[in-house]
Image (spheres, rainbow, N blue to C red):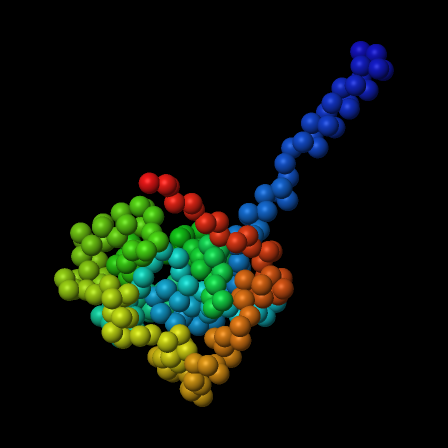
Amino acid sequence: MNRYVKKVLTIIAVSSAMMVPTADARPWTRQNYLTCQVTLVLSGNYFMCQTRKGNEYLIKMADIEAPEIGQYYGKESRNYLKSIISGKKISIKVRDVTSKYVVGELYFQRQNINREMIRQGYAWADRNNSSSIYLRIERDAHSYGFGLWEDVDAVYPADYREENPVNITTLKQTALKLDGIKTKVLPAETSPAFEDDGSDLREQITLNGDLPPLRPKEKTARPQQ
């Protein structure tokens, strides 16, 4: 093989290597995940967590509805989630960021805890935004009578909240009380953890450096009749 042919093959090999996508070419792997340590479990689907940079966020677990603390199996649901993640370092696969909280799937030790909550009978599948997988897991838990399904008259949390509105700040105060932690009661509008000062958490979480810029949710066009 002469020197010219070797040179051509080297150029081809280098060019091919440059075309292979690297890890940085898949921004979704970094954009979609938030790693933090759980500081307080509020209920069976809400909790607070703190990032390595010291920023604390309210997390809502996607695709599930856990019974409220005042409902049948509400405390049991919270206690089960707490037994798994309290004080632990966890990962959140971020679905969305609202002005108040981060919405996502909770992973701990490679297990999807959102699904586990439903599988063990500690939560419903969210009727408004749930995949067929979540609904199938709920049907199985229901058929075996696990957890909250022991009560044949179990009330779906959203229906319960229509007559019993739940305030996030009150929920936090209740969680602290259940954990035996004394704290000054603050009205919702002045609570530092949930104060709505008009800023967007989506922007703040990016400025904090805990997540790269998140793309806005795309609107799905309705098919014309």
